[in-house]
Length: 199
Image (cartoon, rainbow, N blue to C red):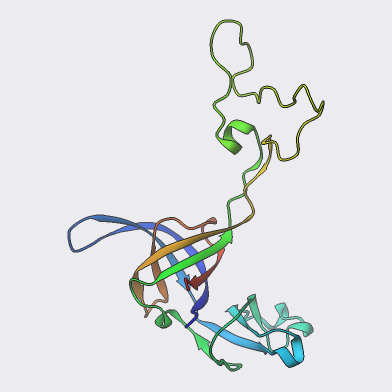
């Protein structure tokens, strides 16, 4: 069974297992999410469900086009079971020990040099190398006389969709809708995350 939910990153913490070992975890406020639309192959050309997360409470912030979908976040998933409009999805669909993949938008770092962006070592610090510590070095070649496509160079870093697979759910707090996922997940605090089971 495919499991999926939307959540918000709270931040990182740590918990201890039965042996007293420290486990680094990311706390995620996941759900509850509501099914707002069911798409079918006959009508839409593909099978999917659209779920909403974080209901908008203030009427003045709800547009006419959002009728029936008064949520801040809407995302589509392809389920393998029958869901109906109005169904609720919460953390109870997961169990401790489940493997999940988490998708989110990574932290944007703006325009960065090659040393920070790609982990280049920079130039040497010996005599004769002046103001060159973090420069890129040679980028071209004798033939062809141009920069080859795909060359690792300075540029905008981060702020792209990243998926981390095979993360383990260590603990579930059903009362507060919180998942403790082992390891780090992409995104800043408060950013939206898509959590899906690994099939």
